[in-house]
Image (cartoon, rainbow, N blue to C red):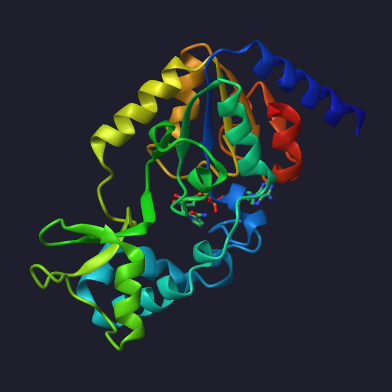
Length: 252
Ligand code: NAD
């Protein structure tokens, strides 16, 4: 226990001294808000490997049955009810202290903005479930309006403009990332003097590479995650306690 306390004090000191903290978050920061991660012990894919198909663009585009299932999953997505937790709040407090250079998130749940982080500081590398996009004409609109169409009986609602396939405005597996968004995230990582990865198994590339990018540019690197990650060897500190208890202690 003494070791954990010492690590928390050390990291708190680094944050105190830093001018440009960059935080990278993954699904693990939202589990305490009731949104399961993918690969943690209670993760969606750990419990049901078939669920991965719903997040794969090839199956989604080819199979109306998969799309219907995906829409049903969106209808009851835990993000609609979820509230930010103490971990999200601590990152919002870090921004209020003027220390947050950028918040790179792999999450699609919008909870960082809900917690008070300004949208221009949040880099959503995998998009957001709060919007829909037409896969044919590129039209984008609020998710809630499309969910209302489901409630009135449409099982796989097409784009109102062109009839194309609609999808949440998230990056599914097999889909290209948006190069400008990734470039911005990598640039910010390289500008950090303290880089903190939170609640990510750091297995999804290229964004997991931001950890090495920050380290190579001279940042202190801290990993806050319950399980080991492939980047633990290059981290200056590892904190494996619950995120909602750890972040308030290092950021506030
Ligand atoms: P992941 O599921 O691969 O890893 C999450 C990690 O967080 C695990 O290692 C787990 O042990 C750890 N963790 C979970 N709860 C924790 C807690 N309370 N305290 C400490 N550690 C905790 O997540 P990932 O690396 O973000 O990759 C999954 C992909 O799926 C992401 O790209 C993301 O876009 C998407 N996703 C997003 C959400 C969301 O928006 N909330 C939810 C599920 C998946």
